[in-house]
Length: 179
Image 1 (tube, helix red, strand yellow):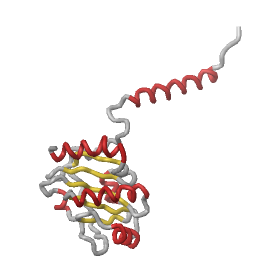
Image 2: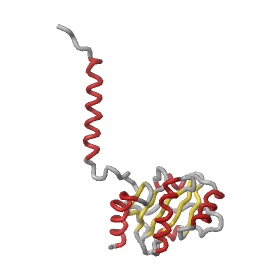
Image 3: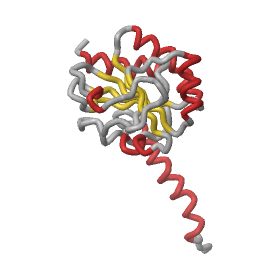
Image 4: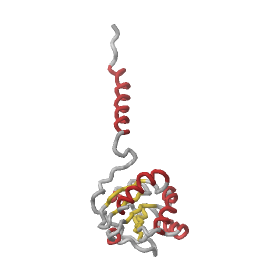
C-alpha cells in the first residue's frame, strides 16, 4: 500500500483555506468599504500649515453647525483630478468642503488650484502626510462626511465619480443632511 506524503496534502488544504476566506469575504456588510476607526468620533483636526494665499482651514471649520466634507487630495493624483469637477459642482451648490493637500509640494498644489479652480472653503497643507495618518487616510482621494458638530459620519475612499459615488457616497451624504 502506497503512503501519501503529508506534503502532498498541503497545497489542497491551503487552497481550501483561501477559498473559505474569499467566500466569507464576499458576504461582508460592505465588501467595497474600508472600515474607519473615526466614524462616530470627533474629527482629528486640520494641518497648521496654510497653502500659499488660499484660505487656511481652521479647526472651527469642522464644526459649523452644517454637514461638512473633508477631502484629502494631491496635485499628482489622477483620481483627485477626476473628482475635481464634482467638488466644484458641490461647492457651487453651497456645500462646505475643507481640502487637505498632502504629500505634495506647495508649488504644484497652488498651480493646480489656480489652473483648475478652488472648490475648498479652507485648505490645510500636509506635506509630510502626518495629518493624513491621524485621519487614517490610505491614499488620495479620500472624503469624510462630518456632522454639524464635527463628528465623522462616513469615510469614502476613492474619487467622487461613477456608480460607487452614486451608490455609496450620495446616500450617506443625503442621510447626513436629513434628505
